[in-house]
Image (cartoon, rainbow over the protein chains, first blue to last red):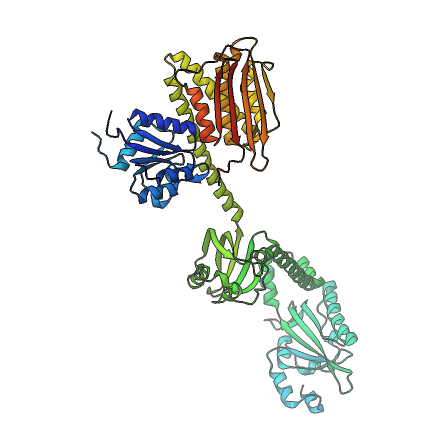
Length: 125
Length: 505
């Protein structure tokens, strides 16, 4: 397995604790540190802008009835790469983010890793 | 005629013109004697003026022998009598009247002829009838042709004509006209009452000629008749419809619109309203084929369009929920697998958790996903352990779907743990669940789960999935707090959960 992501700090925004726990488990297995997980857009924004180092983020598109895009914009401004996770399929993203690395629920460990590496521009070794 | 002219009864020039007319004319005195006739009349009968003048018409002109001849003569006499009695012109549309002719061998024979005759009263200076003027047209050939074409029995055809067939025909035409009028009114009524909107526009500026009730309703009952579309419905300018009308007018090709969006003023001073229309603009042409107007018809499909939008939203939402649920199940499977080394134990735990999730779904489905009561969820997750082992005590609390699902999983983990290690693992053990809601402005649910009569509880050396799920779910999904206490008297858990978390802001 690739160790390319070992030691990276990955912000998780996901409202369902069980799905958040799954992502944490996957991230830990890859040697990453999960930051959060944030259950709301506000918590996500706070974690995205509190100055702590972030290497990437996994963003659920629909977070407790709100769309996660303010967090995406904040991360984009500070140059932090991120991956969307969604149950809505391809059509769930607005034009601004269409084509952005996205994982579909339910997801495999490989899908999470590949999407993160694509977003971060990390070569698989 | 010359005699009449001489007597000054008619103008000499007029008499000359009369005499020269190719149509046969003759004059009768009121006692039905010949008073005059023109050359055409004499030629038609092959007689001289002297043979006729002063003689009673029926003496020289007996219409032939037999009943038929007498009957025809009666018909002619009746017409003269009507003129004299009613002092009015009388018509004989068709009369059969045999006339004497000189045959090739020089003998005089009766030849059957058909005539159409008009009898007009001519008045003297005192207004009395001085003469009856007969104008006849020989229609023998026409009638023979008609009979050949119709191939009907001679007598019957004639009888039917002579017994007022012309009048009947006139009546038929009149009746047909009445029917057409009724039909026209019915069509107009259908047009006006049609459920779809209909309008007729005229000319290159598309002037409203007529429109029905549905059209009126569509445009907020504005007075539009006689106005061009541009003036009658100013808001449609720039929405493309006038361009379509112009194009149909110019090309004669109909234009059809499907679920077309249009902004319309539906009430005076109201803001524009979006409606969706199916419609067609069809050209109306004159006899020469040129487009002179437009037939506009269609119906409002706004409801259908909205329903389709709602359906798409619902399908998207369903997809989102199904995918999220699958991710949840995936997580349960993965976490359960990590705490079980044997496949049988994994399968049992995994299935039990899946069923707990499914039970709460059932409860929510019963309320059409509006929510579920806290007590119902507790009963659902603990009933397998016997009703007397668990005491439920608290006021009714309605939970929304998302917290209901969370509590369903939490109570499942608590009950499973109690059955494995706690109070429900021994026959005399009990679980006391008490709850209350504090602060009605910002309602907070306080719930305690206390196990009594079981073995002493001991904190686990390594946190299992069950207790992690409880802690994470309360904090993350419910924005609440939970204290797990492993006391000697028994395990207990104290929950504080806000009931209107306002997460959907």
